[in-house]
Image (cartoon, rainbow, N blue to C red; front, side):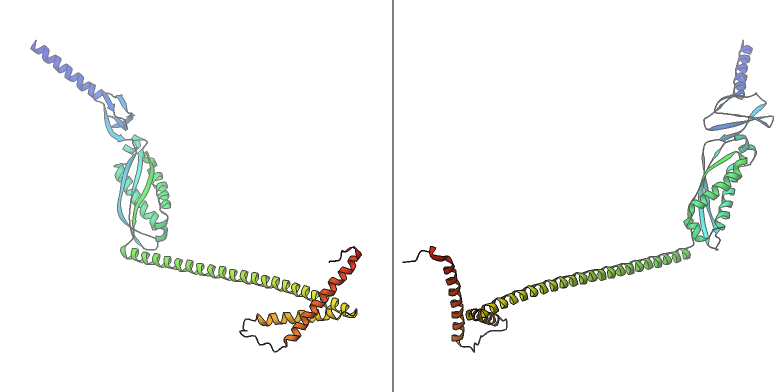
Length: 317
């Protein structure tokens, strides 16, 4: 019995050892390469895998998830001999575990050196201004070159980004002064443009004002001329009427004409803004006589109207 128990224990132990060497569980996101007597045969995918015991072994455990590779800082010389400090980051994914295992030794180190070398190559072919302003162009060139070089390793480079580009301190100070000068220049240009636009608008306003004033003067002169023309026509008509009355033997019309002008002249003299005291070296009798002439002319006019009325009028008692 004791010997049988030992046999059973040994058999169970051998069974578990055999099962462990035959059954392999591959976690998600990994691929295992299988080697038979040191030679690659196939790749185990995630899940349960079975291999030949004691003959097949697991060669490499490859991470097939997308991975991040930090690119350390390095000094790079641009095309115009400017010394820059550049670092970055790369993202890659293993597509073929066998190639990543057997086509290159130490995949991450190989990709790191390849990326750093190409960063120096790409930036070295560009001027400083291009390096600082065209980072997307640098990223695209690096991605194309590195992805093509790592294709034979079963790797897909998905993205390469330049994180930081640091020029020397003296160059940064010179760039700051240049930027300040450019901003001052733009400010002066904008100020000059504003002054120029203001002068143009002011001149346009003055021109428009002068045009409107000239049009106003033109309209006023036209209206003054029209008023003078109408006044002259009225004066001529009045003179004609007086002349006709005189021709008919009516002297009172002449007295009315003279008295009217006489009164208008006295009114203008009295309303003069510089006149404080009015001296009248005239005889009051002349003025009264002129007014009497006006009264006589009025009586004659009303008398004629009464005669035209005829006998139909009733005499007053």
